[in-house]
Image (cartoon, rainbow, N blue to C red; front, side, top):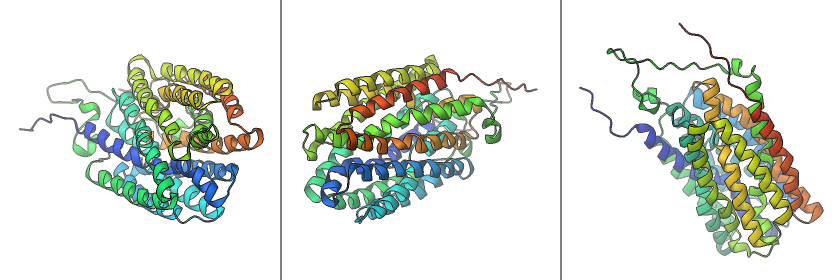
Amino acid sequence: MVKRQHVFYGWWLVIGLFVIGMFGPIGRFSITAFIPFITKDLGWSRATIGFAQSLTLWMYAIFVLLSGYMVDKVGGRKTFLIGGIITIAGWMLLATVKSPWQLYLYYGVLMALAVSMTHYVPSLSTSRKWFRKRAGLVAGVIASAWAAGSAIFMPVMTGLADSHGWRYTSLVCGICFGAIIILFAFFIVRDSPESMGLHPDNEKIATSSGSLVIKETSRTVKEAIKTPQLWLIFVAYSVSSIGVSGILAHVVMWGVDLGSPEATAGIFVTAFTAPFIISTIGGGWLGDRYGKKRLMLIGLTLSALAMVYGWQAARTRESLMAFAILIALSHGIQIALYAPYLGDLFGRANVGSLFSIITLGYGLIGGSGPFIWGKICDIFGSYNVACLVSVPCYAIAAIAIFLVHPLKAERSG
């Protein structure tokens, strides 16, 4: 007699992926915490550091093609383990940076590789293999992990960098964060429910008593890339990320410009990440119930309006705080729904590879955000104009999602 499982293992997996998601992506945002101290220590311009932030997104976009393929072929567990090792190396080498080329290599390339194996693509792709009915909710929870990690640790990192130096902070964080990723990947992450004799959502299918068989059709990557649906989602995910990547790269320095002390400027990241947690989880839950496409359209429209507010009103520390909260609430509603939506359209089997394809656009196109925002600030002396540039980006993304229609169902015997 088979012992009944009281708690579906998929929920333990969600805990593991959430913890990994808290610590892995912080590598990408480390420069955001360190930028006031690096500019003072090394005398580099914001455009120089902004280019490094854009470079890491561009390289991340390329590397996720590898991590997405690895999730589908060798499993998420091994992908996370390798990512944890590279995370330690990236943070430790970042602590030794003395010239721009080292920043571009260690942070722009190596850290990008580490984040590609510990962030959205492997996490959301692995979770989509475990969940179908609750895919949106689960994706929202896991997608909020980086925000939770940033909300907690970014102020700590700015405080440590102020008191002990940004190099020491980078060294300590790298060792601690990488070790946590490795431990949770090894002991908790499993590649798919089938690898444990289970089914998505713990559904009971195909029994000898004649239970209804739930059949899922998955399209190959080759079939998917021939559809306009994939490329419309590619466009939406890419251009909608320009503004938010620029904000995350420069919000600490924006706060310093408006009079915030360097040691406490990390609070502006918390102002973004804390409400982002609520909106991603809520957006995922609502997407399961009222339709992912509908929630994505709502989130993109509200994000465009939030950028208008940033352009017109974010001129004091208080209004910048309000702007960070508004863009987090609006952008977060839709951002976690892309991987579940891909699974709905194309099936679970290749969701890792398909998500990595649209993430390529996120990095190559959306990754220009930090450089654009830094350049605009160097030219105009403020970040407000950069908000205006981001408004049409969200409008284009909303139009692209609106044009996505369900694929014709294939008939089966």
